[in-house]
Image 1 (cartoon, rainbow, N blue to C red):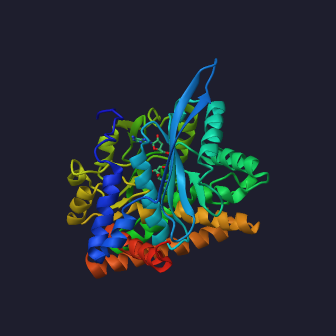
Image 2: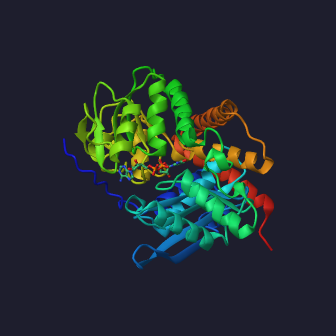
Image 3: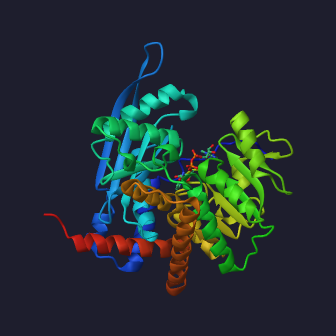
Length: 423
Ligand code: NAD
């Protein structure tokens, strides 16, 4: 099979996709046109250009964003992405998706997102720290523990959040742990946050398997993306007896029909920086990987992976969107008609923001919970939210994404209406 890792990241503008998904739910809800007008825009969009001293006197100017879509249900919440292809429209879409995500699982936040156009894979730790501290300073106009609380996303991690927290705290004059989530446990992070997105996704996969009568024992699983969401998804689903037969990252994919050991992949990736080359596994392109024969497909990389060009070729019975925005609206329709259950991103990967919420609550109270408590509370939220959405999808005879949107949009519209229009 081909070994190309190239994925067309430019197929659809994520913001247009987000609007289309919203419109489908708004039509179904017969949403008032005034409310539709409010919810179709982001409330605040900040663009920043800032210099970073790289090395040998070279100064590079970076562009970053922080967007708040809707903050009627609580402070803004959403990750920070470091990736070369970040655009304002991508950040806007991700912020809107955060609004719906927080609403669908019933946590008291609005939606926000941030990003910096950069390639963290080709930057030193020192450069990343300097970039993060300056970007934090630039967006400190918007962020704060009761205003907008960032978290990790593609290309950022717990260390990045530690730098954001420290920079904000330096400006504030005292330590403010609740300004970010996804921090290391040593500075106010939560137990279980690293695995939370994947753990939440796996709880929804368990419920989806029950709904369609699929036995997880021996079920074949394909995971696209082997970062935070993908790697922990692979590990946790394998613990349940499922067989991970293929995984990938930007370097391309690997497959073995007899199953891959997620721990060995992790060790290999830590050593070499990639999954390809793992002994005992065949190479496969990211494109072919999506079309492999399997029961469960977990896109856990970036947007625009399943479109009208490949939706007819997807063999999985369940597509669990650990990533944000991997499936286009056209592909949604094709998959629904073919009987594939898509667990939509705003539900499937909401475990991350749910445990972020637990982290924020713990920081504000200075009272920390045990991991078992966190996982149990996460499970309760994910199982209930999944079944609320499933019931709604049956009631209205719509796919799971439309049902999740209907639930989320009605909650956000209700909060926005109840608060009224200022002034
Ligand atoms: P990450 O940076 O830890 O991992 C991303 C992985 O995807 C890496 O293995 C990278 O090599 C791979 N990747 C990137 N571009 C790719 C491409 N074009 N083809 C194939 N693989 C590619 O990021 P993450 O935090 O795991 O986020 C992954 C997805 O999950 C994103 O869509 C993100 O928005 C979503 N998400 C993450 C969290 C979280 O808590 N981390 C929460 C909710 C949603």
